[in-house]
Length: 595
Image (cartoon, rainbow, N blue to C red; front, side, top):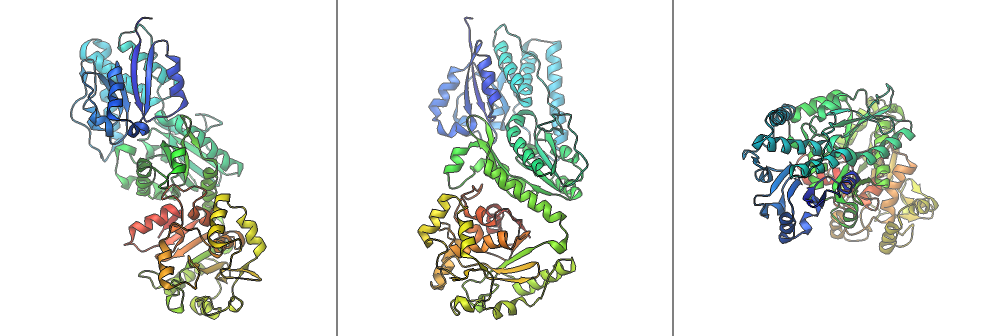
């Protein structure tokens, strides 16, 4: 064949089917693929050379087109598959040009807007069939390309490339686009015929159909397998990314909802009235968990970078879902070898935490074990229970009374007197022997310590010596500053540094993200989760130090200390309403549900 078509594809979609489709049409065309997340690595001249080379250009870039705004597309055929209005204004195919007026970035009813857009597209395609020449023919071909891309999958990608070859004059055939339903049930083992069983506990999962279906598949499979291996049933539903509330309406009697979607729920990237989301979630009476899926970030970059999530991933997979009440942004998937793959240990952490939240919901109150953590820095009787704008002990009394009234097993209420009586308020004044509190035995601590990743163990040893260290430890073990009130443990969060240091040093250590926890600090949280077996941990007041420990800014790995310390225990944080910035840190880095 003498003529070959040159296609430049700039894609946000990353999957194996796209590469396979490119290979399958190599007889007819050359496809130069650039992933949108790689665009910042290119110089303007390099991208311009790709554009000049191409016969036709198809672009899927979400948000700011960045370097593409500097490119001269001239009279090249440019199909804006998905993207902002600045690119759409340059879009053309043959005699068809995209209307200059772009849609608003926010709409109150995205479902209606979607239907209007689809109606216009169908009208264009129908007109192009009846009058298959000139601008109508070109408009029809433009819209058909969008349909191939929107529905995704190998066959649609292959036929999209063939369609573009045909548009540019090759004598090839392209099948019609295979349409993906807007929303519905899908189970990895049972396909689209799946219907959930009426049993509890049950986890609802909402994920992408259409163009992002393949990007979600492997992660969905791992989540479903994890829960079903624990005899927890699942109800997975897919959405086109716009009609997400319609998909969520299918979920009945679920104990938790997992959303694998970017953006806010109502309308996705199109935006929508958030009150409809709130109304729906209130009706479901289920907590919503949105992990971070790095659809356009390489795992190698995430692993290497201190910030963790890229700006785009942070905004789309954490910030916007938080506005709908989503919590627990554990990064569970990212790009490796041209596909989105699950991160095994992060899947484990995320699913464990949901399992614990579901257990907390189902367990009788009389059996629940709750740890409440207060603060004392700088250490001293005058700072015991210190928290910003909070009468900690009056608040603690109110919490304990409410817990008792709700059926929790609570003994004694005079917590401050008990802490003073047991000499827990200032270790500088008393020997370890004089302090009455539980101990974590040296042997148990060392066993727990050597379960940590080697890198973390090395950090602690380099800073604080071999376990169990020399901070708050005697021959009986490491002191755990806790009093037990039945099934309630009241703990004083250990200082970040050795108590013999000055108050200035102790205060400066609060926000220190360069040092790991010392052995006693680590033992405190290990004891709460493994010895006391807390069903939930409450940090009472603004603020503690756990969320400021060394690790990534957001999108924590198994080597980030906040993740290690809070582990899989449900975390509730009573935080002052005016301190939004540090409350956000607590929410993201210690998986806190804020009150």
